[in-house]
Image 1 (cartoon, rainbow, N blue to C red):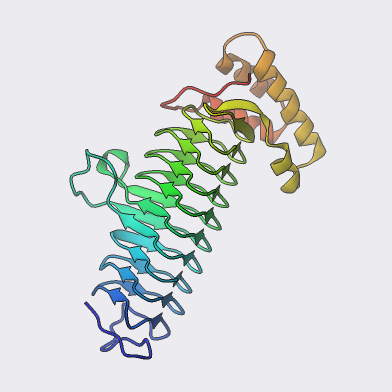
Image 2 (tube, rainbow, N blue to C red; image 1 turned 120 degrees about the horizontal axis):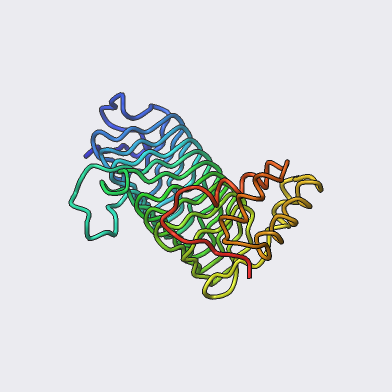
Length: 279
């Protein structure tokens, strides 16, 4: 355990802690932790021996970062978050596993993120520029993309894949092994137990695919041509002949839109879950 002077500088600095890092005297930083330039660790925080904090990372106060956890530059973590604890999985037997969080994330009060398991590849990943609001949870082996928003108390279960630009509403839950495609939006108080196509709109207590995330598409500057193609593709998936995958294959043969092809590739990819289909 390393002790700190009243000015927040470490006594007997090692190469693991950059001299420009600011560490509150009440914080506990275990030997072996790597603290990058300009990082700040506030009052009553705990940082484990195998943690790496990138440049400019800020732990506000009462934050626990433990396990084999790496946090990218300029990420800010708010009070009472617990980052890098062991998985909530009875099959976990103490094997080495990791949590890797990207840059410029905002991780708000009470958020929990767990390391991976041997059975899930051993690593939980979170991309860049995400917002994880109060009480949100990212479970073991989840793969979360960039610019993802988890609203208050939203939970992503083990082994899920959440692509870029996804929004998950407050008090919603994503079942283990579910994939949520890029740009999809999940309404509040929604349980999602099946895969969600890219740019899909899901709502209702048991998670029903109820259209496209048109607002999100427009905000990201997607062209009118591509939005029109997506709307036509959605109608074909909803009302076309044959099984859902058969309709997707026909779409892939007929479309010249990269956005529609993205949906086709998502539907035809391997998955452990069924799909939410248009109602």
